[in-house]
Image 1: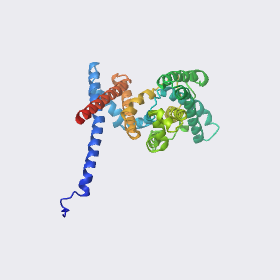
Image 2: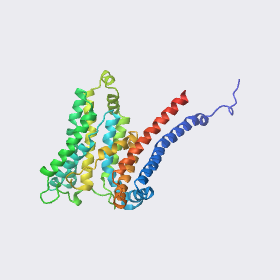
Image 3: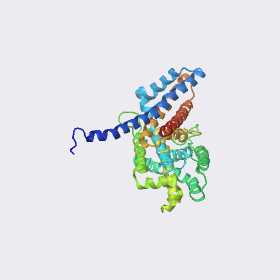
Image 4: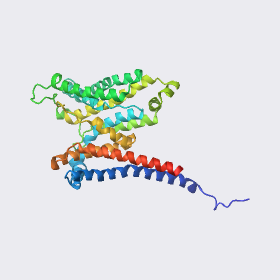
Length: 365
């Protein structure tokens, strides 16, 4: 019996269903991300109205200073550099199933070491080499600071949430002590480290004020994403975090890999501190703590620990941060309202995920 070729489904018809399914899934994921963000803007707007602030004016200032004006865009891109390194460090830990909540301490210690070392090193060696050495010193200090929670988790099974938070508190306090006592610049009345001259800092991109640290930050996130998703080493780290017993049966050296996760995560966050000092700040003042570590945690979860999505969400956070600072000066909204907005987004995203999960269950039933 012959089959009419006109009646048989061709390759295009066979391939259409999977393609349509992928498009529907992509649309669903976009809606699951954009929807909570829009809802959060509305909720935050009602909060602003409740405290007597026009939400349209606030959002207008945020967009103007963070995205629409040339100077605002350059500040936003510059702010992204340290945030990207922090995001890369958190992606390593979270994808490996471990919690590194000590980012603020690791960041500040890395920043203080870079601020103390760079002004001295530029006087005895070429500028690029001096910045590289300060960068590596910051990384090493952050890695060493992470060893306590890493070893306790690896060999004693101590919950790293508690230990990393404790080490973060100690790290922030130690950084302030170092600034005020050990690395204090005697030539200034304000307690701070010596200042790295502007000419010796990381170069700017083209004819803008954007620090070249942005390129390093983007590279760090992309490399981390590819390592954690495309390499055998990344697979080992994910297995160790997901099921340590299975990892042991598979012959993996769980304690060593656990320490490696903390070292990589903390090292990248220490690099963030170095990039911020060597590219923008030039010094560390007493009691300075931008709290990037805690601020980026919701961003990484919003990106679902995907490196490429994290870049977009870090840009959003940076824009909100720069714009929020401008709004704080002009209409009196505290800078911390940016974190309130990000928190609302995270809550709305969790609700959207829950509703989507229940909808899938109901559809299967």
